[in-house]
Image (cartoon, rainbow, N blue to C red):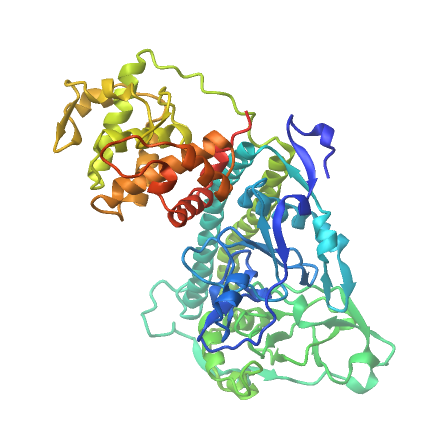
Length: 621
């Protein structure tokens, strides 16, 4: 962990337990496969560090108190505290809206307090897991490790001010998004290489790599279709078996040491002949080994074995061995057997129970192999290798790049939690030459863009939009917002929207007369403003009639209260809303707490917290 002295000013190192509202295990109840009742989380639900709803089970409990106790809330973090070391400490943050998922046993639920942004905490836990800290502090047992809550609560967390946390998460996600696009492109290239490999093999055994005149559906002159059994022995014995001493070293090749499709094998293990002569599959140099069991066969675990210690090897009992009788070359056989077309037909021939199905020996023996003359075989092998060697080099480059991308991801997180990813926040140096015109620009763009989304603004709603742009989206408006009867409002806004050159009113809705002139002059917040209006439109487009201005006023009001009192505690907010007086003859409400119920205030507060807006309102200046 970094020394606190090396951290930026106002950053601190705290115990995890001091910044979480809740850390608890889940419900221990009977679970069912049938999709009836509430879904419940399991260890495998977060296998890929997201919430995978295809890996849940279901429960019959539906008591409201039970559901209230164990329902996972938005922004709760699930933490794998009991698992094998490679998976220990995996996390996933719950982002599903209007969906009930019950918290099941064997995953810890961590609920962030108001001191920490849940996304920030989740990224730091991801980083810490990759450093190996969870495996180091875990208690070990057979095949799995566990971390108790007492140890986890003592875990050191680097905590910057809230506004910094928000900016760090924003930067991490920006960089991860770019990284993910690069990874996606690399994986797409991998798929294209796979398709090309199979196309090369198909052309090779149709004779098209060595004979440009061959017709579709026909073989070149001199080629013949022959049963593999006529060209090779399947599962033959070792020559001179009786004369081999038990003390002789032989190569040992378990299934895991055979790569998929590439034909590469890892000759690192040796055994004594006497240890493996029974129960394992024997082979000699130049044999082809072919995985016969699912899923190894489908995945292409096939290879030509060579350079075996003392010329002899033994491997998994799940290999078939194909030994050429001399007319066909082993590399030619390998290239034929590794084709997806052959493996697909082999899969269809499998026998045995589900999960342990095998390709019968007879399938391979009876399969027809296109066999060219001996000299053409060499040419076919050369043509295949010349093309696929290029694929191999590209594949190696892609694999290295993918590995580097994961290292880069960890480097990004490391810099983030050292305070080196984002620069210290500097107040905007931009100051418009003509503040009045700039304000009309903003209001004009808001009015025009909102209208395109089906939302018309009056003076009060556009004022609240301006407030949200300033305080939440950090687009300066240069207005001073006061607590007004109908929400945060700057009286100076009247001057802008009453400018007859650019604005007019129709049925109390503000309309822009000359948007071209307003947008003619550029300013640094154009893209940010468009995104902000789109976001607000998505929130309010669902409301119609008088409900829309009511919801706009509610949102702006709660944001203003949070800004003023520097708290997101519901009771404290409601108390401040009681102090926000309304003195209008047109309404019966005397304060904001009367106008907006506690239930709708709580719902609004939840929206603010979920969008991370509270972190911008609770700014540590």
